[in-house]
Length: 95
Image 1 (tube, rainbow, N blue to C red):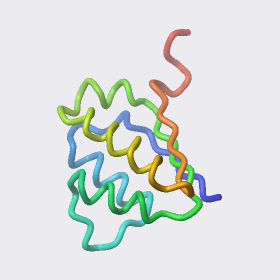
Image 2: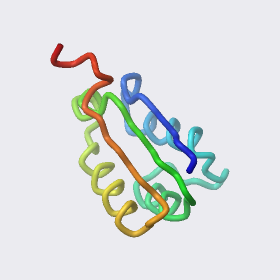
Image 3: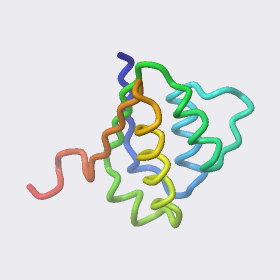
């Protein structure tokens, strides 16, 4: 299984998130950088575990973060070859 680990700490906008996901997951050049396109690309992935750290920071900065969460959930439910793990912090929070 291909494991892709990202930190959302630097994501300041929806476009930052789309760019980081597209780069890390090697989405095709025609990727539309929107939630519908994200869903389509995630459901096409094979044998991938996506781990995103620092989601609490993304939730504070990205207005449509709830939409990203819905897409992550839906895509993982539809694609049995995709696992998505969202972490609030990188392990430093709460210590």
